Length: 243
Image (tube, rainbow, N blue to C red; front, side):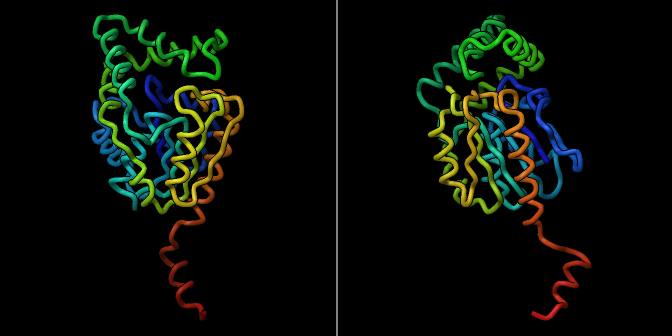
């Protein structure tokens, strides 16, 4: 299983989520300034088929992975995200954040992003402090690479329509950055996708809805296991049985 965090997030994003203990879980860091290069890094970080879970920018990387190598993706869970191309106001916001970071005002840039991370623009002090710590661990260089990568996004809906793996689309009903309509569009494009909501939660679902995220991942992994092709002696016995 490969898990990919969002912008200004690292592996600690998943610290409250019950990731599976019975299989290998790998974390991808977002340090390349291009979605295509991030997708390439994801594909080269694991061998063979894998289940991918991504939040926000991490899910967008997952869309490009699916576009490039659908046969490698055994299951897909995307949350708090958008499969559309960037909007004009997003380009402007990213340029403004990059300008702050380039001017040595990284903490100010982090503060600008904080109101959109939770179900309220004024989250509890503990959550805000936790987010600041995570963002500072990511650091200004990776943050600028992530902003550059955001600007290379393209509309992914056509690629999603070609998917043939189990898929789950998860969203918080109070996500100000990626509202429910974004996720309905994604689920409508992914054949057979399960659309699951987390009432009252905002953008950082693994923190605000860890039980819901854990359950979604557990169910997706079980479905991916059921869809796994049978090989070796078991496959030979199946072929040998009369039908």
